[in-house]
Image (cartoon, rainbow, N blue to C red; front, side, top):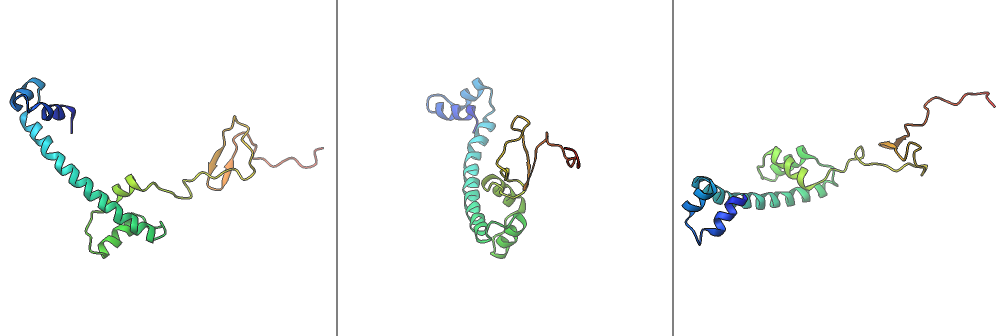
Length: 141
């Protein structure tokens, strides 16, 4: 709900809504639409909370391996008709992704990079930008 809508709602006991809307340059239809929309937003939030709980149960039951397509299929199998994009949004908002390619692994040697501590990590490999990739010269003393 916008600040103007809240202000009108708080002051409507003291002043007429028509006067408040005229002074604040808000149309009455916008004010009433804002008031009606609040109930719908709260109902949608409650439905999203219930859906998030169901998704969490299915996600844990799958040992956190199911993504949106499989969660969607499981909910359909259980008789719950929910849009796939809504499932994706709820999972994105409430279940942070934890994938091995996204996790940063520590350097197994325990040393810090020579480039001011700047070490590039990708999977199980650590690349130090200052290290040469050429093999050492053989036969040099």
